[in-house]
Image (tube, rainbow, N blue to C red; front, side):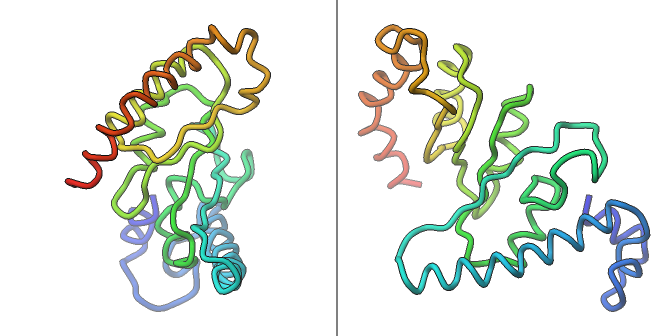
Length: 181
């Protein structure tokens, strides 16, 4: 989206946000994302001076088909990920909260070069018992955390609990694969 708007406005290298990206809520969102990112950069950099910890951002997704202003606009969304990465380089990765349909598509949009896939929130549902394998197998995920997992209806027999048991057994193979890559 960013590149298309920039090219549609003449691929200029100087000017106002409107000069570069045209008028409209999409440009307003790009500007807001940049501004938020610059602020978050200051916070993350200060945090890293105090604690040597990875810094990441949760991304509340924009539910496909909605325009800026109809969702939590300007957050670290897939269509703005490059804006956030440029304005907040102290952030180590951006992580999607996946509550919408289209799991594979969302995962692919966030597993890009320099951004490992970590899913800090996903709806607690039985289908995630398979999605967790997809996340680790297809996208080399570094984490998968269903929201409210402690509220599982039957923790011992929950399909996701069973998947995590299998993942624990596969962990040495997953780690070995990461070392080779």
